[in-house]
Image 1 (cartoon, rainbow, N blue to C red):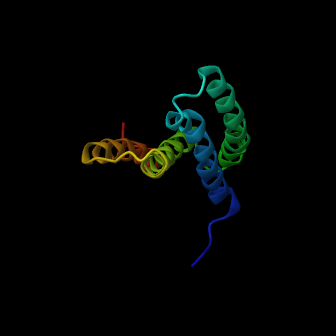
Image 2 (cartoon, rainbow, N blue to C red; image 1 turned 60 degrees about the vertical axis):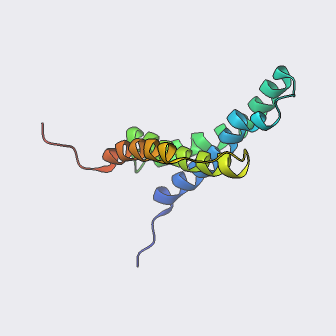
Length: 120
């Protein structure tokens, strides 16, 4: 079985790592609601710096084999998966059937980005 070349797999791995950082930057503070808002903003910016250090190369290198729309679609699907895991394990929130249906519809839309163009 042939292995995927670096240019195909590296952007995906970098987007997964960057989304882990971004999810903590955007939602990690919800577990610490008593923390001062200014501190939360500064901490989130610090975490987001590392997200950018991963997302920018992911998109730069990925653009050699994927379109910008495909990279964005990939990022959205990865974000949904990371968020579902994060909200369950870190925030202790339950993922409901409605959440899963909504996430599946978003993912289905993103998957169209990888199909051949429809006839005009």
